[in-house]
Image: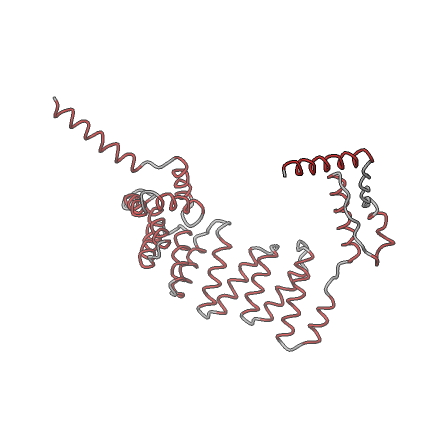
Length: 326
């Protein structure tokens, strides 16, 4: 009977230890579930990594994912991709490449797997292979939020591999998919200018300058970069003309706007803001600046005769106590 009870207790303890080792805290478990839906680098991966790094150890995390990656479930490719991300975080380049390669074999239509493989190959200097992997990632119809990062990585890998024509086509395709995005247009134009493709860069800067949705700052930036292109090509007169053609903001309107905001803020706070001296535009902004004026501080109240005599009496009493103590 005693041996039977001892066996049950031992089995229960082993089961509890095994169960506790596999069970994650609810918050970390939710982050791992997010990783399964969207595997790769990011906040979810960082949280799971930090939990095991500060607790049971990264070997435990690798074992947890490896046991699930070796199965025949549809999620095996996802855990293989996560193993590659874990190896890359730990600086194990060869192991990361091996796991990423296996994840593309298990999930050949997964753009994230091809992108992770391409980025790892680019980091290892295997640029030709990286370009091929990133092109496959674009070919399997990646999600909309993944496409910008793919285009950037592909174009930069092509530039590093001295494939100027391929990089140019990639940037042009990127701009064609985002024709109204000023940030994409500027980024593509900058890359073309760095590669000394001045004609293509000029076309993109002009597009940015004339873009209806671009803010004034972007338009001025486009004009200044067009002027820089002219300078690089030795056309100083055109550069000067472009610099002079940039739109200038009215300094008076800017000053008035600042004064209105200052006065309005002071009125809401129940205080008075100092009037901004603007002698050149005083006639137009006098009414706006007179919304609130400084009040001179009230003079300190003069001491009365009673308070003066009281202080004198207290001083005399202190002197008398000191003399009696001596």
